[in-house]
Image (cartoon, rainbow, N blue to C red; front, side, top):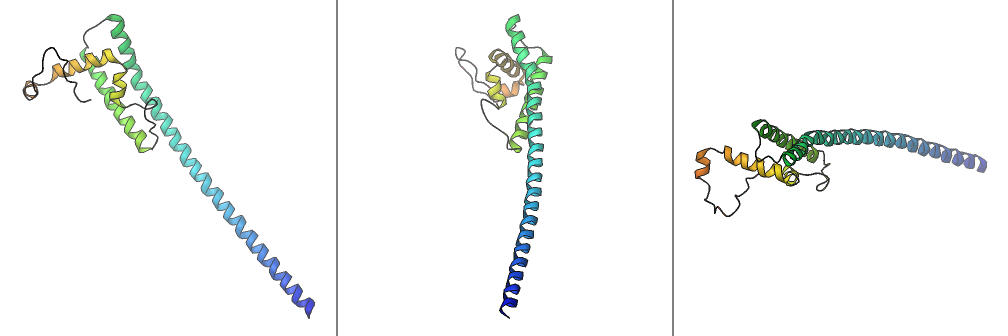
Length: 159
């Protein structure tokens, strides 16, 4: 009878070991699947992030080129078309920045710049742009602004 009890206990231990091994294999497979899905989601977000950064470069390259043209030609004004392109670039830049923030991919300066920060990097264009925007303000808005000392630089509008 003792050998029967030993065989029964050995059989039970083997069944428990097989059950534990099966559960472990099943859980490991499920964890691998979850990890693969998470990696796929991360890769998708990474592609979106890279695409947004590429779009931002495409938007800002013409602005940088315009800055170079203004410096080389020593122009003191912007054409209407240039102002429209700057306004369009401003809106696109803000949308791209918002998308990067939604993806939690915003790195901040010096890697990611807000529109105002980028505008600081193109000083000639910024000066001409702000002057053109201020010149385009309607007369009723100009009446509501405080007079400034002509010797002092004009306050910069919020960008």
